Image 1: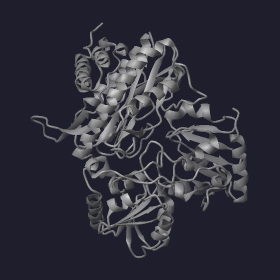
Image 2: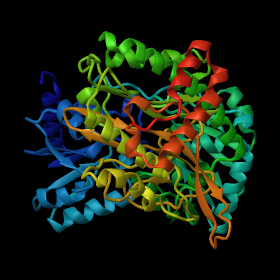
Image 3: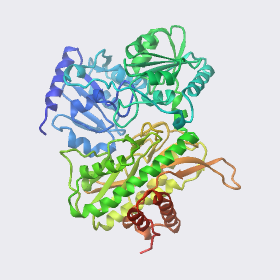
Image 4: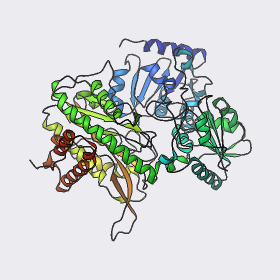
Length: 601
């Protein structure tokens, strides 16, 4: 592996020695606990070469370790030099558990308090203390001193998200937050998650690739007024007029000082979203911290009728672009002239032809053959593979539109594929149908239904190492909590959230055979109320939001039950009805053929 990552690791160790540190923790996040971060915050990638969207590292004097979950088992080994780094999979082994066994008495392990949660700090401090070691907060991240060409935070201006697309004004949202604070006898709440700020103030930005947020902090007070902190020039006159007199715009540099001005007051701060440095600054300033979840999290997750209607419009537009792409792919791929990057570029161009695309919703996963066995593979110039006959091609992609965020995965064969591939595809489809048709009591946790998707694979001794579904934002983050479909023993596990009507989630079971192929079928769903005649309980179910054909040549109809075959036929009938008016005659005919009823072989 030819690069200068080894030299960067050596330089960091030298720097740590000058700071009297024996180790340092490097997470993949920013000061806002974001999943996707701006270029300026890509410290883990700079140090290791890892390009995934979830991971962390620990550097000790003689050992360096990468921590990733099952989605990145293959990718981390391809991108990070095993001569310098060990690989540990979470959640089987947590970083804190690993540290407990790896440090020695007297060690000082540094961390950046602007990149860590209070709970992580408490857990790590306890683990290190068990071994006689110390966790030390560092004022300036040592990587920043070494990263000479580090990008500056984006200076791009905020934009206004029209109230006609949000369904609620910023004033209404801030008033609701004020009521939440009053109920808790709190004076103010700190908003540090970028999507929470964007949602609360009905603003958007371009500071993070594929996530329309703007770098900022906010403090909302019990009377509904607020302070919004952003870099000079980021908040233009249009945004100021939109926010009104109840919101005071202040420089980003004033945020830390503002945290110290709450002596004797009660201030709410989310332990999972407001970093340790925020909590510590509040404490030192004399505030009483109310450790509660950011009040926008659940409100943002439960979509209102305007947001639901906007999402439906975005899905139809996106679905039409997807079928144009799939038709083109089916006709072109057998020639052997396509590559992963050329295919994903074509899909992006087709989405752009809608003239409504603001951005992709994440880096497209365009993966053929063995690359698709890595669930979060990202094609690069170096890895770009030719798409060849006999392979399965997986495309996981989405668009950011002003009225909605989309995310869809489809798998296409390139010529004839194996019976095993078709068997596995059909088992994944059976799991997908089981989630789509699930009916469950109001208050059910996402983890309670996760096994529905896995059962057809489990019956064949198979599984997949990721969650089955994640929440999604309304022209916001493609991965939005708190809802998800997943169990604690799979990546993304942890505390579960009750599913509620109005939440949107993905439905994406999969199967991955290392070195050969990968399969995933993903649609988005809306949680809706279900009226069960004669039932005793309020029940919920799902309404399908994504309408694009599921490749029929990969389905083994005999493996489906009559009810499952009926689901496929009904789904495809809805696809044809929705998309045909949006397509040219040739593409509409292609969709009609793809959506014809299944025939048992």
